[in-house]
Image 1 (tube, one colour):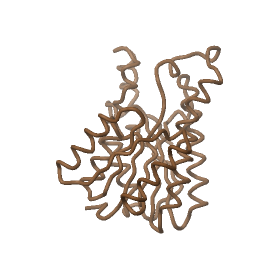
Image 2: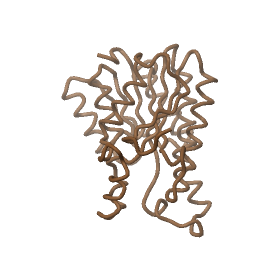
Image 3: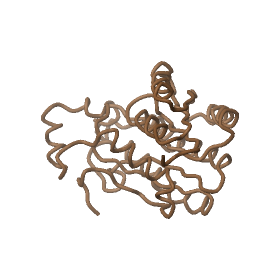
Image 4: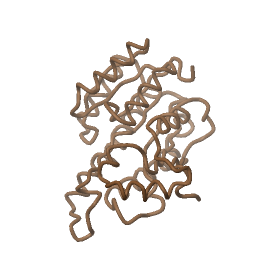
Length: 249
């Protein structure tokens, strides 16, 4: 098993891609902290499915945008796990009202709301994790292809993910050689985002992908597993794109 003996925290892992990551990490031998902000029942379900399958998991509530809440979560992880080897900063904020909006309607309140979770949350957790990790630790962040190449939708979200990309490169240098830091850059995946699109828009997005399908949560989880494991021990400071070939660089 690729994560045997490792201790992992996946933020925003009560559902969706984060839940898939938590389950896969546990199957590969890691003790996993399943994080939620408001959906404890969903987090309990994810952790329960892990333990039923013979894995090890705990549930930790935390608002990653709140430093005091993050401090409490990491105290719990220190007490329960004794340390940390892997952090996946998966928690993020995006919704239809912010994605499908024109420049004229975009407000600073929207910027603050998204940046507090996506950018500040990534920093808060990375800062705390660095204090628990020993040599060989891995931090995996999450960004989105518009942050690399631009788009006409999702201005605030893409900008926050751009900050995550820059932060990942900075942290990779600051924390080397003790801790590796990399960033997954996702294209169009099967998440709640698809519900914001009508059938015509979905077909348009899908047709633009050379592999002719949206990414599945397991695709994201497998990439996270690679970057978290020793298989990527010579990779740090990189932005790894997973988008079915939609943008090539």
